[in-house]
Image 1 (cartoon, one colour):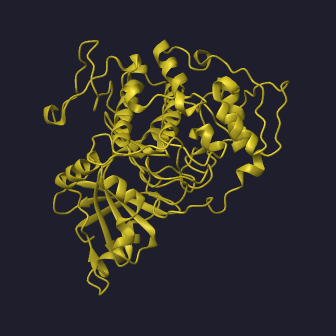
Image 2 (image 1 turned 90 degrees about the vertical axis):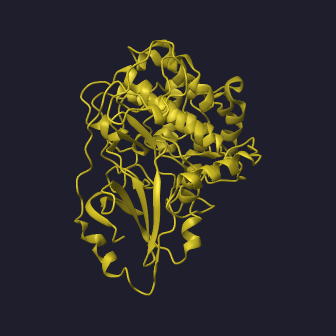
Image 3 (image 1 turned 180 degrees about the vertical axis):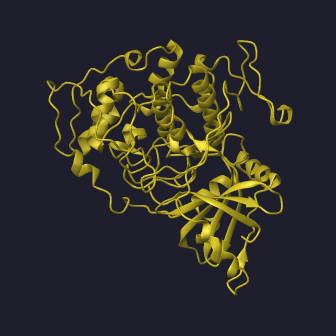
Length: 450
């Protein structure tokens, strides 16, 4: 750690803190995530889900893990530095984003998701706070909950922030898969277009009610498996017809409405994969520019309409989003250097090289990845893995059991009490995992519909 000069803290939470730092040797600005838990062996560090998944990925829309350092039993992740996240951009926004801006961001995210799915992973915690932005580039971050598609159920039911949680997870399905990421992206896409959450539930039961009030309650034809899941936990869906998305998301194209509708399908089998989304008409004008052909400081120009491909970087506007306010003095890391020569030793052998990434990708290509019919998940610290319910969380079954909302109850149209979609200790951060319950404090400039 003596190779890095700490600039300031940009985030702090339950599981760790994030610092903006400078590499003294190269002059590069990086983000250093310091974990609060102690790690007493190198095997324990490299077997972390976040490390294992990111070591296998090398994509321009997935945040780059540069180095893993274990020093005096403290674990540090060194990431490339990104200016801000999507939540910060939405929170500080006075006017709506253009559909072109939303299209470019979402296309990049779906490229990253396609890459992840091809390599056997799904994220499980997509939300605006975990989508990092620097100028016209957007990257997926926080892989603390990432899971192998081929892993075996059962999984815990608590994953992802509630507002972006897929209905099969809310209904405690013991197994699920990459379709939960597609649901989350549908909700995020709608939020980018309106600057308000699409399903701002204040509890698991209220979340399901909000979903029903927007897309209509599920039927035997729409999602027979979901009705069975509800029956298993003694939950009865409210009888709601939903509203046209075009009334909640006005002034956008029919293609945008169609894509969000597909992504937010009750039945996970009916949601498109990331590869299918990239071929949707909504992204018809998006294109791909190989990194080797990209000008370093120039803004990529818009190509002729109809040019297709697999977009990597494009945006109609450059953003100069700043970093988060310093919350603590950088002295919290000052003890590292003082003890760098102690007998505990220093491990710094995880610099992720291009060759290693390529080798891992080739290994995966030669492996037959078998996707289960049902889907997986867990909600915990970014550095610890538990197989049961998340500790200290309310039992969802108890909250949903015996709850019946009569057919005569109209869809609610008022905003629930102000809350945040998941920042740690009341704030969002660039790389930190979120707290186990949605924090208060997140407000939007317009009334929430549904």
